[in-house]
Amino acid sequence: MTPLSLPLFEPISITELGSAQLMERVDRKYHLPVGGLDELLAPLIPHYRILEVEGNRLTTYDTRYFDTPSLDCYHQHHGQRGERYKVRHRTYVETATTFWEVKERNNKKRTRKTRIAAELEGFRTPEIRELIQLYSPFRPDTLQAGLQVKYHRLTLVNRLSAERITIDLQLSFALREHQISFPELVIIEVKQNRFAASPMVDALRRANIRPGGLSKYCFGMACLNPQLKQNLFKLRLKQLLTSAHVSSTA
Image (cartoon, rainbow, N blue to C red; front, side, top):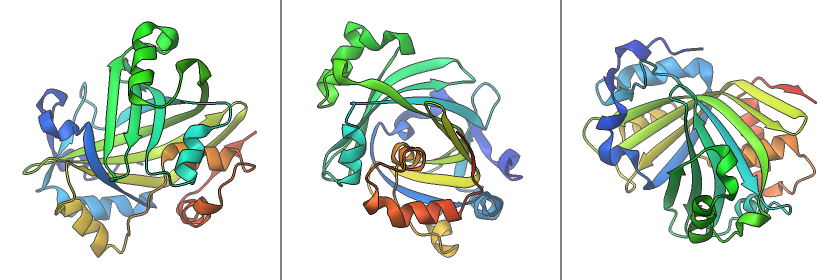
């Protein structure tokens, strides 16, 4: 479902993003049913521009996460460690550009993303090994491919401040032979260089939508591997699953 308000936002190109790329930032996460998205977005047209890539405002992401055999990345998040990491390979489908990324969240709740352009097959190259060794606690040879996540994304950029909003729709997850998708779920992330006033946060508050964090990696892993320890995620999982029509295959 594509929001009807999409064409009404003024576009911004990827070269204009500048500081709004926010490779180091703080963020807040929200979720809602897709049916409520248009009503949320319409009042925000004066406050944000929308990222347009190759003529597309709705862009496709294909991400493969890497973790240790004992799933240290997952358990860092479940254990609410002050410092947590994700290692992933991401493809921006419309432009066919690909990156290896290390994402770190520190004990001050700041997120830093470091990446280099490289194909998935470059996992064992010196450049990828150096990226992982410098910006994560993992040894590259201990990591293996795991969860695959696909979704469509809208990106809004604040006209006045360094704020970027990502809106993810039509999420699907795959782990080995198992797949699950959430066509009715929307995940919104508000990304800023520091916590500050935000028209989007104000609109979410007026709609009685409260922040609540659960990474897409942990969400997908918990859904597709119910044997994983997930007691600290139970409330958030229940809320997310309530917002979504679920389709799964074994």
